[in-house]
Structure formats: structure tokens, C-alpha cells
Image 1 (cartoon, rainbow, N blue to C red):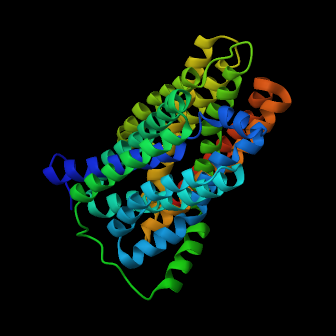
Image 2 (tube, helix red, strand yellow):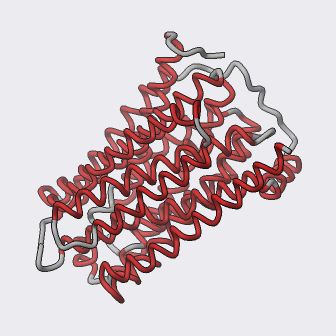
Length: 395
């Protein structure tokens, strides 16, 4: 197995982080564009949200099929197929000039993205030693955050200065170059043997994971957590573009630099789990994120930035711990288990957008505050249930 501080570890962890970076650049490139695209297509905020939601929703719905496929043909093959599909699906967006077709193409992009996301952590869990895995998964999720930041900043600036079509072309070229580099660096699997002809067994394992309460509760935590973080940032974008701030798309996209706090906290989560309870860490992360939402209520750009920093750091800390929890607690079919976690995660992000945007349209940030606290309360309840269940298993 791959040990920490070895050449194989450095190559594998960098390749996985780069793949993750590319995936999340493509996934979130359109998020800062939403207000501008709403104006272009004469659509409401809820209607234009489908450009982001279609991608995340299709990603969520195809994670398990990709994971099951990886049990049959191998993790690495699935990851590489996923990455090489990105430039082609990206360029396909240029072939349409209607919102409906662009939304459908973004949905196809979500299917392509799902392959890498579904199996990357399972690859690490199987190929890395336990110590190397805990450190590598924190770095992998940090790359998620960096990719999301870079994609959003690039999307905002490129769209304002050159147009959304040029932004898409540039991302497609970067995705192709990155896929070639990952293919060269990522080691072949040594600790996993694909198994053919067991489709029925894989379906049973999906059901088995959902029946395992310590897994399902963590999956629900991940879904609610993501519904909050990604959509609180989306709503903040609409808030800053509207009067009295009236910021440009490029300036508004700068708020996604606040995700850097999540990059740091995701990395720290691996250290936390080695010394303290992961469930207590999820509670801590949720509390930090909730405090950030309350601070952001003030009509001050400084308060909003501080609030977003806390939202990002707390939510990514919770996500890293919940994600690692599912991967470690799953006794069999780890790729399927982590894919199921991400199904909950991205469905939460997709549906949460419509929920929080509706709260924004109904009651501005105070409406978002009220709606957000409902979701935070549910996360606390799930953490308590997970703690009780974990304690019952140790008795």
C-alpha cells in the first residue's frame, strides 16, 4: 500500500488533487455567471439556478452507476474516462443558444463529472495506508475547494471581459491538458481486483449501506451541509449585484476566495480525526458555519466577508469528517458507499438552491437566515442521533 512521504504518495495524491481541481472548476464555473445569464435569457433567479442545479443533480443521480461500474472495470479506468469526457461536454455547450438546451448540456456535464467524484476516495481508501488515507483525503477535499474557487473566479472574470463562450473554450482546453497529466501520474491499482458479473450483489450493497444507520445519518448530514454552503454563496452573489451594492460580476466572484478558509479547515480535519471524535468535529463545524451566516446579516461588506469565511471553514470541516466517516465505516463496496454519500451531498446542493433562493426572494437575507437555521437545526439533530447510535455500537 502507498505510504506517507514516498514518491508514490506524492504522485498519487497530486494526481487525485489535480483531477479533483479540474472537476470542481467545471462544476462551479457557471455559479458567478448566474445573474448575468438571468439577464441574457430574461429568466428569474430560480429559473436560472437550473444551470447550476442541473449539473449537480445529474452528478448526484449518476454517482452510484459510476461506482458500480468501477467495481466491475476498476477505479482508475472510471476516473480517467470521466476526466477525458470533460473537454468534449464543455465544447458541446457552444452548440446551443437556448436556456433549455444549455441546461440539458450542463446536465450531461454533471454525468461526466460524476465518474471521478464517485470513486476517487474509494481508490485512496484501498491503495493508501490508513494514516496516508486520512491525510490524503483532507488534501483531496482541499483541492475540491480550490477547484471551486478557481472555477468561479475564472467564470466571473472571463465572462465579464470576454464572454461566457470564451470562458467555456478556455476551461475545455485546461481540462484536456489536466486529464493527460493525471493519466501519466496516477498509479495503477494494486490492492483492488475488479469483479465482473456481480451486478445484483452491487445493488444489494447499495441497499445494505442505506440500512446501515451510522452511514445513512452521515450522508444526510453531508446533504444538508452542502445545501447550506453552496447556496448561501449563490444568494450572496445576488445580494451583492443588487442595489445598494451593485457590484460587477467579476468583483462579486471574488467572494469565492472565502472558500480558502474551507481549504484550510478541510486539511485540518484529518488531524482532528486522529485525536478527537469526528462527530464532535461535525458539531463544531456546523456551529462555526451557523455563526458565519448570522454575522453576514449585517449590511457591511466586511461583515459579509467574515461571515462567508466562517461559513466556508465550518462547512468544509464538517464535510471532510462526514465523508471520511462513511468511507471508513463501510465494510464492503467502499466506492458505492462514498458515492451514496455524494448522492445525498449533491442532491442537497441542488434542492437547497431552490429553497434558499426562494427564502431570499421572499424575505431577503433575513428570510435566508430563518430558512438556514431550519437546516442547521436538522444537522444538529442528525449529529445527536449519530452519536447515540455510535455509542450503542460500542456497548
